[in-house]
Length: 132
Image 1 (cartoon, one colour):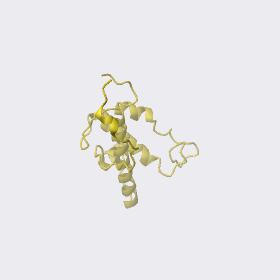
Image 2 (cartoon, helix red, strand yellow; image 1 turned 135 degrees about the vertical axis):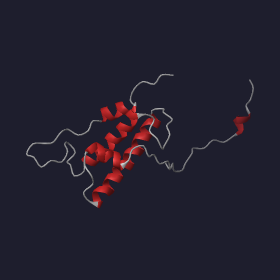
Image 3 (spheres, one colour; image 1 turned 180 degrees about the horizontal axis):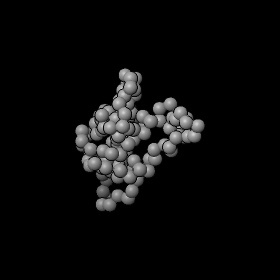
């Protein structure tokens, strides 16, 4: 039996804080406005839309990283991923002021159903088997 040099080392649990500092810029406010077919009415709308775009870029990038993809931060890997990121940002924006089960509406009946993550995941290419 050969004794390893590593047998004399003391091991300890790693502690600390993990900070995510990467900034993804796949979709833009202009792309989401084009998708929605509207322009921001107020500065507050623009600020919220900017927040939604930033959150969508971050979320979509992190989801693809966790699925094993190695993407460029500044350009979407393909048109499907770009559309998925734009769709997610638009969905976040449209959920503003809702109760969580439908989009805000002035009609007596509820609006269309909320965006499904199934479509976004499909466009992002995640939640599917990975092949080696």
